[in-house]
Every structure is written in structure tokens, then in C-alpha cells.
Length: 149
Image (cartoon, rainbow, N blue to C red; front, side, top):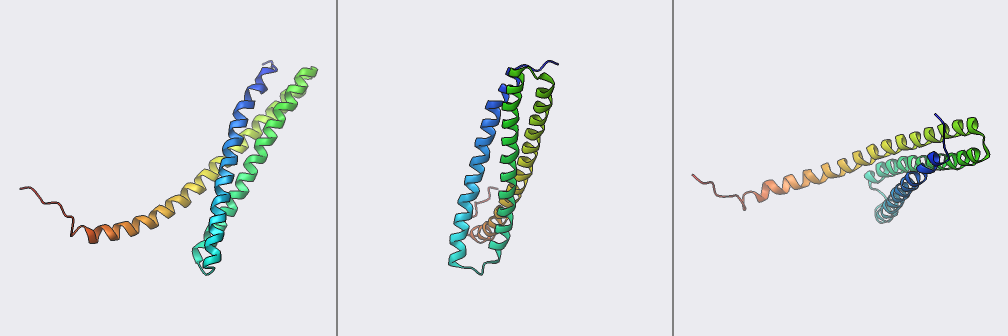
């Protein structure tokens, strides 16, 4: 297959949108960390904060690596286009393959980060569900529907 100049250029918009999503994730994590820091300053003896810090630190590392491989992919596309423009098609093919591999690695890390964040959110929800189930059972006595016979 002959690689054309437009082929790596097609990835520009996809990689740009992906990097925007990664930046939004980073900003959300930064907001969570700032809020967690305020809670820690109020009550430094909370054990759950240590677990959250570990989880957020791991997610920050993953997001950093996602962004790093996304940037490598973007740079690979630029270098590939330059090589194609200069007529070095064989080298451009190898650079394009490395760019696609970087994109694949970035997306794989993104999938892992989503799994970790979903697990953390499910833990938070399960804690709240336990509280609501206890409340529901005591309120059912007052708001019980009349059974129709």
C-alpha cells in the first residue's frame, strides 16, 4: 500500500480530540485532588484519604503516560508527513507505523484508567447505597403503600 500525505493528516483531528479528552480527565483529577487536600487539612486522620491518594496518584501517572504516547503519535504523524513530502516513503511508512502503535498504546492506557476510575466510583456508590438502604428500611414503615385486595 502506498502511503499518501493525506493519510497521516487524517489522524490530526482524531489525536487532537483525544488529547482534549485526556486534558479534561487531568483537570478533573486535579480538581478532585484539590478537594481531597482541603478535606485532609480539616481531618488528617481519615484512613480513606490514603486510599484515595493512592488511586489518584496511579490515575495521574496513567494520564501522564496517555498524554505522552498521544504526543508521540502526533509527532510521528508530523514527521511522517515531512518524510512523505521529501520523498522518503520507506522511512515514512516506518514512522507512520510507530505513530499508530503510539496511538494504540495511548488508547490502551486510557482504557485501563477508565477501568480504575469506574471501580473507584462504584466503591463510592456502594458506600452510599448502604446508607440509603438503611434509611429506606426505616422510612418504609411510614410511607408504606396500601395493598389492594
